Image (cartoon, rainbow, N blue to C red):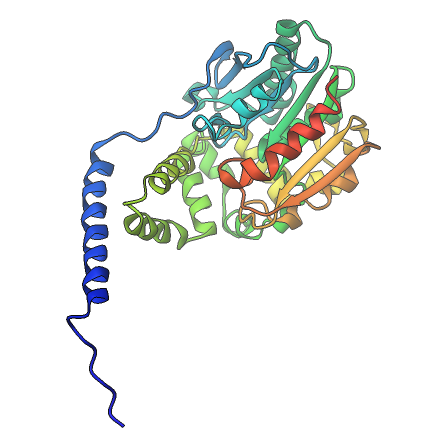
Length: 362
């Protein structure tokens, strides 16, 4: 039996066509707006600069409630990215969320190292910048204790400092997000930093500092099709104001990659990517052996189930290496960035963090 031809004048076809035309028109108009207007203002929570020295910046966010927990929080950002991932826009800001929950919030953030700062080393970050920030936080608050929250390589710096000086310096609690300790499990990074092909000495000796564009390309290669796919989704969703706002926020942050001080890059490449010393227990900073079992304060590590930058296998040994009796590992749905910012973080990580710290910050 022959199939009846569709009724080209059916009302539902006219309705569907009109809807699609309206969507396309809206998308085109929104596309013009996208290219002619600035993105949302990021990092807008009111703050004061307490320390500004070279590549280091220490911020103090102004209290959002009258009563705050006794123990202040110091956020430690990764040295490759800027800290406004913790403070995107109102309603999607971890800093704001912590402030409204009653915490006194500080952040150790970074600027691009100057050419004359190429000689900064791991010692500079772990035994100078970080302890200077901790002491300034304690002086500002009048408290002897501080909780540290480190993100990605900011977590590595926090672990190293906590193991060497944390107990004597008044470390109360330690939290790390997506923090690697087994660098052999970071397979894509291992591929591009393979010592057989990657001459880190030549790069640093020639350029001084490791360029941000080089690091950006390395991150991009972890998911080579993701950027193109994201652009396609953006074009298709230009009519959706919330989608566009979110895209612009995260795309700007992901593209805002900082260069790294040359000697610091050389040292971390050799000690961590090549020799995996943190996992092996042979890591030294300033000539002092790093023993993660010396960390006895309450410890929380949060990993992202779909993290393409720090796979869960790279952070999995951490909970066993830390010597605290009160320690917990949580693996949440999400990726490296969506774990800490955006709707996924608002629902999953932030409430967990506030509950865990609230019980240990009195």
